[in-house]
Image (cartoon, rainbow, N blue to C red; front, top):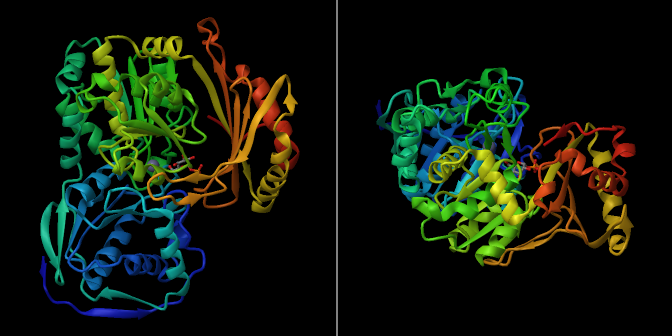
Length: 549
Ligand code: G1P
Ligand code: ZN
């Protein structure tokens, strides 16, 4: 369609006061987004926050969840009315988060809009979300999202086009008013990037023997087309390696959050039946990863540490690592590797946006979070499929099973037993009261002993960005003990209702004889101490967490 006619409409609107982005974009129930002008208000506030987008390129796509296409249509028309020169949109509105990040960088776009609520369930009853990434390809920093929020609280009008947006179900170039809409293959550029990072010949050789079996669970979310193309077509893994590979609006009714609970087929085939050597999964928008080996689950905090210790074996990281970073609640396994490599390990607040400056300035090459997020300087987002390819390449290099790679790592560096317990509160106030009470207790904790462990540090984590000196406070309570055990407590910033308290437990074990015990049992004391200090059982009325990771 060539649509050069352009009738800009200015529509009056009333502001909503709840358009405050959380840890990762604005996430709400679909029904909230369906309210009159709700999406338009937010998008116009976002466009208004950009200094000068006339003549600029914008990247646009989403994880294919319910409401994706309606939102894309709306945004295309608003972008044209706002003067963007070009929008690159994934065919059928699809783009994984890491692929979008790459496209922004590659095309020197001003930024990108990714429509996703990540691993939250989709469908008409599920969640929807809007994330904005800036020109470096990474999530917008807080001062930017705060500015969108302030604008949204006072918005009175938005601009759109009368004309209809073009059909985006096939690759092609269209005009929408004066703006070019380039509908692109969502996979090609990302696939090309991966080829530079990993040794495809070595990985192909693994599959060629016929003796190596892998399963990738795309969870009916965005990574299906990416994984099929890269694993099955380029790396010649057998057809059927990718399961649940067709993106669906409701993720097939599943919860697209890669975990042992949500990926039963993987658990059954790789962990229990031991039929497969390697298993991986990714989430709704393709940035999270779950890594399994025959009979072993690789905890994300261990995974990033093992990747850092081995990165120099891989083509993309042959020159070694500039430095590494982990979010504060992530275990300190990565710190031990950095120590031995003689490189810096930065501790940042939860959320990928805090890695952006460190990556941009070349301070770090790899980074990760305990929440199944791992990434590198190849994009400015965490990257699920990349993590799976990284592990495949490691297996090909070492010619050892995943379990052995992990065991050898623990023997060398020690093991950080680690587990996160989440408690859900329907009533936000109760969770906030718990946090307030905990903050009051912090100053008195240092020096106190609990079950034989003495507190050496108790604080509310605050981060000063070493590049731009921005200070981000109140990022969670850290309680560290003299035996290297650690407890972290913070409230989730991604939920769409109620409040979730996350309690992270960690205990260090240097003795190889004691590195294969049950995680929950080994952490019994740390868990009991966290419960005592927080009063979680009394305050939540629950004797057990709602989920254990
Ligand atoms: C959660 C994770 C965090 C991650 C974020 C976005 O945020 O804990 O590590 O960056 O999702 O994927 P939270 O709900 O804890 O604020
Ligand atoms: Zn995600």
